Length: 151
Length: 241
Image (cartoon, rainbow over all chains, first blue to last red; front, side):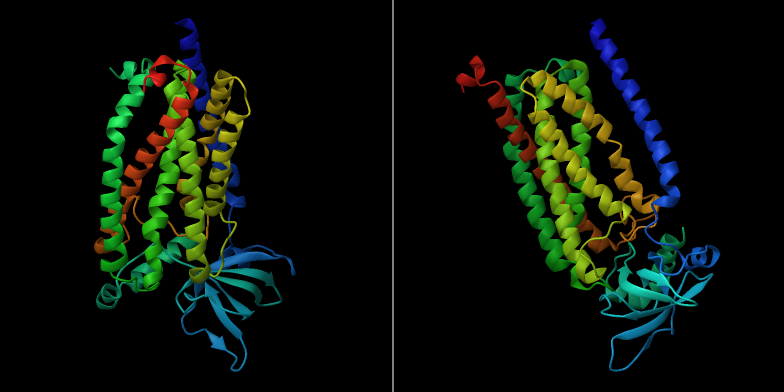
């Protein structure tokens, strides 16, 4: 009987420690576990040239330009506060379009970002095409993507 | 009553009880999964952005849910087993680990198959994907640790402690998409506001998730029976079966 209650205390102790470690973990990695930076962080922070990292944001409407005959594209990535010009030479994912969330790996040059890899970031909204057309819900889904990007 | 269930449960009683419910669980899972997948793959409308490719979520999301749920079963069994030293819960822990590892692997594979055309990559080292991969290794480590002891009692308590410590990963997996910037999208269903998924796309998902849950319990209990019979192979009640 005594031995068993000792084990109950032991497990409770273990759980409390665990909760504390989780708290520290989240607190510590809050900044370091970011998969990508936003254009605002890009403007605020001094990233050295040739430092490879990821930026995330939305492809600005009307900013997509293709160089005909090549795979070269350029577009602006925006978080609606700041934007950054991105140049890319390669194959874009299916979901890539203006107004789509993207995560881009590459490095910064003088006034633009050279992309090595472009990934489409999908938001958590799922709906049939008719609903999207009739309600114009794409605006809603865009703002959701923006929320998840700029949090 | 609850205390008896936790501390007094006998291997023989467990075997007889699970024997009675396993066929029901498997039948229910077959019905739910068949109906849910039919609804999801043929009846539900295509997505406005992803077209038909979104339908992989009818297997990806339920198996991801089971990969987390199986660990909750592991965690619960580990606590009971550590405090009361009940053999049955040690067996449930092992069986849940095996099933959990399989569902985690399935989640990772179906996610990669979806990720390649949609995101443009099979794999990204973002917080959600990485923590799910860690869960897979965690399941394997518990099984390996348990298997590395000759003495079953030592094996059980070592595996229990690792299982309890490993539980820290579960909230990290679930909240990773909210706490950090990740490539993986945020939760569509389990969140405070209304689900951000259309109703006729959501209901097949819930049905398949229920089906996967029944399937998990059915196969997990069956697997635990096998481990239990092996543990108790010299006991009288096993010989009488």
